[in-house]
Image (cartoon, rainbow, N blue to C red; front, side, top):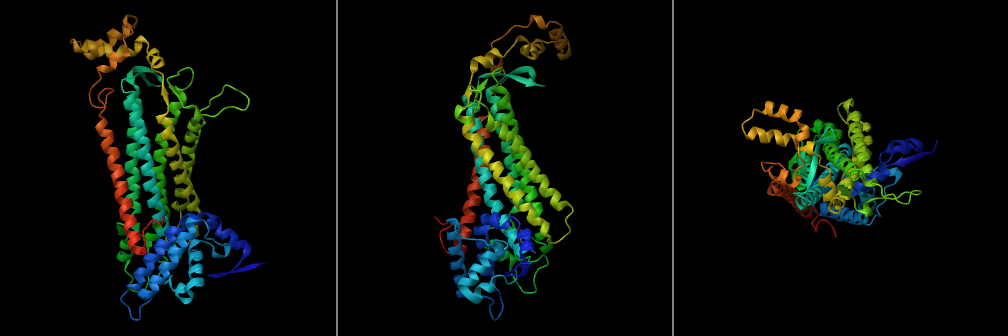
Length: 458
Ligand code: ARG
């Protein structure tokens, strides 16, 4: 059988390909964070209170120069990860060893690929979560702007999909916006859980040398190190599952929004018109303008949930400590995040460009939609509610079609169609945007200091 020599032993070719799996491709997304993690680790090694030094300050500078070079290559898409490397971690070590000789062989001191990949994924998750939060705020802004623009456009409010009470387009749009703002809490919660540095936990059990895990964590701009070194490794898979759970809540919101669009743009409703550039045609029916974007968002919600459940299932019976099973979570994790972010990005401009057919929305009102309002009018005149309810129920034929614009003018209490607090939505979105900016700025500053260059590299 053909064998291949790797940095960590000679392996059968088939076994090598089987065990590396998709890492050789997927790890391209981790090259930059792997280099940043290594820069922090080597910096910490260079400051250890041991004599002789494990790595001198001059050596640290040389390693960092090599890492910056690799980051540059990665940005151009020209840093190769070979099958013999197995993954990004050994590709970086091989490259540094080719360039720096014995010094390259020192970088893995007091570290394992287990804590290395754990820190890579956490740095990756940080950036992805910030991106997703930013995109979520973009969609919230589009929905709120749409709602404000059509604040007093009446819309039949439905329960059981049947006509219920007078409502407005503003109420409909901002319901989805508020849902997404709650999802931002979950994304920020996931961010906080993720914001702990596992580096230095090594293979799961620490090392017999006085490493400084707090320093490594600080150098990387994490809020804190994970504490227990075994949990640092058990946290892999759990962290991905927490992040995907938040992403899947985002998709739950988006899927319902997409479903509403599909319903209300049906010609039988004709309340909204999707921008034609967001619809696709048919290869046989010349007239077709299909809401494929919405259908795909609905379908992708299932895929993100499947990714979340996939990770959960992979780790729920996984024994303590590193197990190679964890590698299988990587693809689900990356795909789930990328899918969610793509949906957030495609919907924002679609919402902004969606047309509203006020006439159709008004025509949708039949007199019975005012039944509850009428009962409450009688209550206002002194009748007990249940009596008013029965009176209206028995005299539905007496109900008149009122101008729904007038009906919603009366609904001014907190959160009602004309009681929507635009400041409330703006303030919540702004708070999220500010957190993103602060987190991003502090990460960039930490990495710039670590690498001694302006980061991110232009
Ligand atoms: N590619 C591996 C993963 O994603 C890196 C860690 C390998 N560790 C090991 N003990 N084989 O899990």
